Amino acid sequence: DNVVCTGSETSLSACSSDGWGEENCGHSEDVGIFCQSTTFQEGDVQLVNGTGPHEGRLQIYHDGVWGTVCDDDFTNAGANVVCRQLGYSGGYGSSASHYTYGQGVDPTWLDNVVCTGSETSLSACPSSGWGEENC
Image (cartoon, rainbow, N blue to C red):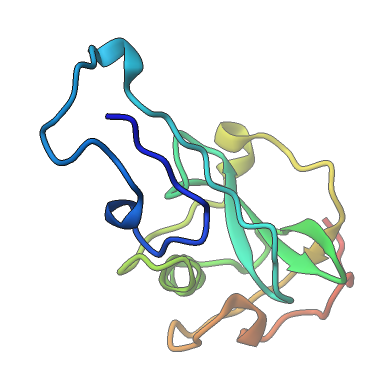
């Protein structure tokens, strides 16, 4: 209870508080947090419009703008690359994902992405090139 952080701590336990187990809280006082990265790197990926960060429509960051990836030639090998890039052990993809996760309104950055599955990032997979698409 009464946890006070300056923002420079590396863990919650480094913040001052009344001590472990010392509290007078009800669950109406439980903490909720929403974290969002504010620094994106070229080729970063994210999944949007899903039930959590583990699923959704694929987006990739290029030239300072998030954009979509067309499903032409996209396979489960590509999904595995994306999932590993996001820190998961693997995954699978669906070419009908726009029915579930909505169509993008952003630029379509990649098309004809053909991953082998061994790539370390989606941007390392062969494709038509940034912004070259027919979707």
